[in-house]
Image 1 (spheres, helix red, strand yellow):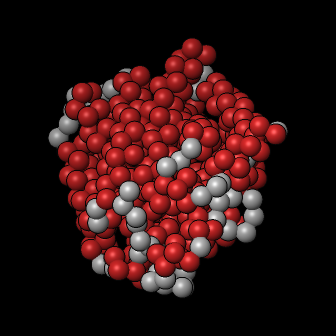
Image 2: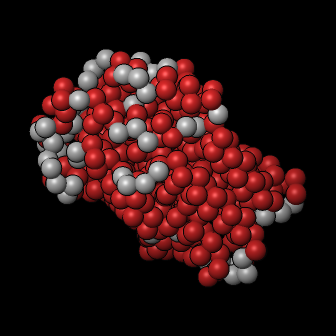
Length: 421
């Protein structure tokens, strides 16, 4: 413990250390990224195995789509309260409790007897994941506040690793055991093990950083122009962007493997492989964060929305091969996770005073995942009315145009200053 205390003292010394993080700080960041990667892998295995689950329980497409994305309702429900608690309590404690919750309810999924108990278990995994994300985003955004978007981007890189490996590992485990239930047992166990590593090795001095508030009057000048109220124009526009991203991104995730299997006749392995490239695209999040720190964040996010609309149209109205679907899935990961997700979160944190960074993270989660919770159901409903191509045009191509408009209305003069370093 003395060695850990020494490392914690090393990482908390000065503003200069914030600009050039120590090896200890980067090590703690790496461990928290691992914790977020298992979160991502955990949530990807359900849509990957959805065709087998759907067959086992005889769920129709709309119900299956709802189950695939209902965990996001738990994320949304946890977002605002968790964000406010994060501003007042130990972020490390919240991270650990959250990991225990979503791991245990991931395990509970295999004991579901039907629709309603499975719906509850999947929603509760989302509650745990939302709590963890609110605390992680606040901790990383506060400690690395000089380069907030860049280091939040590394968290999303970790998400990309989990989202890339999760479908592949989940499909392999299910095939080896000849049961869709086996991957849920393995992923639940992995989550609990990693929570133990965070408990032992990550000090509270890292997770509980106060950001620019601890750097004195010079740093405080950087946020004097930011509105004092939590709810302001830029926050509202950021919320609108999050809602659009939630419908566009999770409409894709929730029923993508179902589309590949039932329309394009892909095997489960090929469908899982195509979905995994979405996670690989998320590995570009550090670049998306860098762009958000270096250039106008609203323009970077608006461009991501525009390209996302074009890629989504091609995916459901043009592409038929595994190669082209994998490329387009990768591009969805780059644009949605790597650029829009990172920069919307960072923009919301930059739209409020530093004391509200936890609340801003919670608002982000509630807005994005509140929309995401019904994204799969909406897409299934639209497919029934307009077919896959028409449904994708409405939810995945036209909606992002609203996101572009919202970003154009953001007032950059009222955002927290980003110091170019």
